[in-house]
Length: 250
Picture 1 (spheres, rainbow, N blue to C red):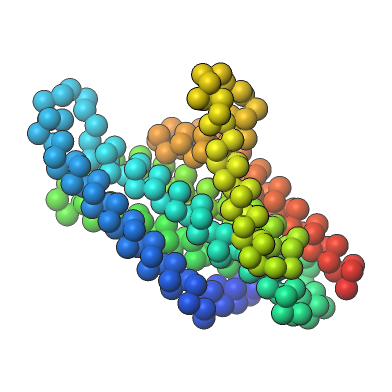
Picture 2: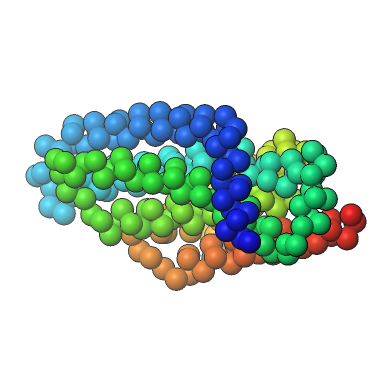
């Protein structure tokens, strides 16, 4: 049943212009940024050749590309998740969904995976850009894989956050704004302490940006992976709990 709901949600995204517009805009912006990074490498290449252990093509192109993709998706993901449950409530179709022989966990996981499926396509398109450089250069596949994992973990966390906000409000726009606001706070959580040269371990651990950058560096640390998995699990469980309350209200 989870797969059935996920496929239905995935198809529903492509029936609206939102998914197509999102893919087009993201590809246009990220393709431009990718070409700018390649141009930067071409300009720096003569100087880098004279420096021992200098950054390579992967170091100059891949992390900035995936970092820019993360910032753009920080805004784009709430546009996708805001309608998952809130629109069902607004259109009065949620009682029909809740009356079906489905558990709350199946509904939430199905919608989560359906939305994540579209974002996986986005990640695939982003990854195809540096892979195109193999036609004339070499890549560090370890660092590229680390960046793909970092972006996948991040969008999964953002999707779980947006799904929860969609569960607790009837208005998709409110859910989208709330999801973006919460994600932005978690993204910039330890920025203030860094500016004051004063480390706060709790803020540093809770920051999405810090764990994303750790994975981006190419060092796959279990602490960062577990952080994202726990983060996703917490918001999915909160979403299931919220849907349970709505079921009892109905």
